[in-house]
Amino acid sequence: MSLTPYVPLVVLFGLATVFAVFSVTIGPYIGPRRINKAKLEAYECGIEPTPTPPGGSRFPVKFYLTAMLFIIFDIEIVFLYPWAVAFDSLGMFGFVEMLLFIVTVFVAYTYVWRRGGLDWD
Amino acid sequence: MSLDMFGHDPWWLILIKILVVFVFLIVSTILVIWFERRVVGRMQHRPGPNRHGPFGLLQSVADALKLALKEDIMPTLADKAVYFIAPIISAMCAITAWAVIPFGPEVSIFGHKTALQITDLPVAVLVVLACSGLGVYGIVLGGWASGSTYPLLGALRSAAQVISYEVALGLSIVAVFMLSGTMSTSGIVASQAENPAVNIFGLEFNVPGWYAILLFPSFVIFVISMVGETNRAPFDLPEAESELVGGFHTEYSSLKFAMFFLAEYINMFTVSAMCTTLFLGGWRAPWPISIWGAANTGFWPLLWFMGKLVLLMFFFVWLRGTMPRLRYDQFMRLGWKVLIPLNLVWILVVAGIRVSSEQEAGTAKTLIIGGVILLAVGVIFFYPRRKQYQAPAVADLGVGGFPVPPLDLKVPPSPRTKKIAASREATGVSASTTTEEEG
Image (tube, rainbow over all chains, first blue to last red; front, side, top):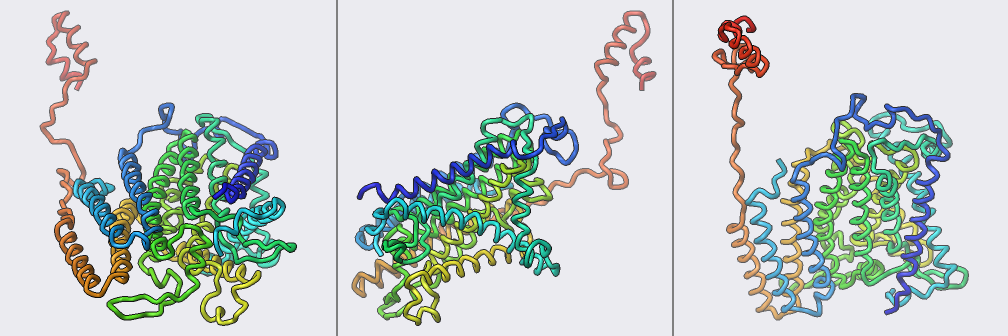
C-alpha cells in the first residue's frame, strides 16, 4: 500500500500548524500593550507569588508513578490491538496466547495495587 | 466501502475537504460554546446569553473577537520559547485528529466519486489516540512554562488524568476491533451495518449491529473515560476554580488562551465523533429512519452524523449542569481500580465467547466453564484486601480544645542569650540570673 492516503493527513496537520502559529504570533500585535510589574508576575490571587526555584517547583512523586504505570498499560494496549484485529484468523491459539499475556499483566497489576501504588493519598 | 477507495482523490478535492472540515471545526466550536451556555443557563433557570443576534447566537463570535483584541501577556518567570509553543501543540493535535473521522458514504462531488472523509488508514483509530496523547504535551509544557504554582499543579493533574483515562479508553476499544476486525474508521462503520447472528450456548440470535448494544460494557467505559479524557465536568479537576484558579492556562491570555480553549472544545468533538463512529453506527441512520431506503446514501448521512454528535455534546453539557466535581483520589481510583480491571475481564469474556462460537459445542462448553472457574479463582486469589480504616491520631488538645504546649516545656536558650550569658560570665555576673532577667 502506498503512502498516498497519508497525504491528506499531513496537509490537514500543516493547515492546523499554520493556523495555530499565525494566531499565536499575531496575538501580541493586535492587542494593546500596557504592561506593569504586577501584571507580569505569576498570578496567585493577588498576593505576592510564592518564590519558586528556576525550572519549576517540586511536586508529588505520585505523578511520576502514574506516568510509569501508564507506560506499562499503554504497551499492553499496543500488543492487544493487532491481536484484536487479527482475532478471527488466530482462533483458539490466539485466545490462549493472549489469555497468558493478560494474566501476566494482571499479576503485575495486583502487585502494584497491593503495594499501594494505585492509592492516591 | 473499503480502504482502496482512499488516496485517489485529485488534489483540489483533498483541499476542499480539508478546508470544509477545518471551517466546520472552528464554526462548530463557536456554536457549541453558545449552545453550552444556553443549555446550562436553562438548567439553572436563567436565560443564558440572549442579547447579541437571534437567541444570542453572536455572543460567542463577540467573545472570540474580544479575546483576539486583548493584551497578550508574557509573564516574567515564563520560559519564553516553551510558553509560546505549548498552545500551538494543543491546537495542532486537536485539529489533526479529524483527518480520519468519517462523515458519510461515497458521494459524487463535481463528478468525482469520493468518500465524505478526508482520508482513512489501516490504523485510523490509532491516529486519533496518538493525537490525543500528543495533545497532553501542550498541557504539560504550558503549565510548566508559565513559571507559576497553580498552572504547574493544574498541568500535572491534567496530564495524570488524561493518561490514566487514555488507558481505559484504549482498552475499551479493543472489543470493537475484535468484532469489526479492522482499525480503519470507515471499516468500523461498515461493520455495524449488518445485523450479525450471534451464537450463544448454541442459540442463534439476530442482534442489532451497533456496538453500543453489542458491546454495552465497552460503550459505558468509553463514555466515562471520554469525559475524563477531555477534562470536562464532573472530571474537571485540572481547572477546579476553587482550588487551582484556571488550571494549566491560568497565565495565558489573548489568542494563546483561545488556542487552548479551541483545543478543549475540538477534543470534545473528537471523542464524541469517535464514540459515534465506534459505537453508535457512525453516519448510518438510526433504526426507525433506516427503514427508508435512501437514508444511507448521498448527503443525508451528514445529518445523522451531526445529530448523534449534537446528542453527545448535549450529554457533555448535561453532565456539567448536573454533577458535582469528584475528589482527585476518588477520580484516580475510578480510573485505575475499576475501569481497567473491568475492561481486561470484559475483553477476555468477549474473546472467550467469540472463540467458543467457532468451536464445536463440547469444546465451547468446556471453554466457558473453564473460563468461569479461572475467573472465580483469579478473583478469590488476587482480590485485594480492603485497607483497614485507621483513626487518625488525635493530637493532644489541652485546655479549651486548643493545641497548647505542655506546661513543663523546656525551651532551649537562643544563641543570642547564650552569647550574652557567656560575655557576662566573663565579667563575673552569673549566667542563671541573666536568663531569668531575659525571661
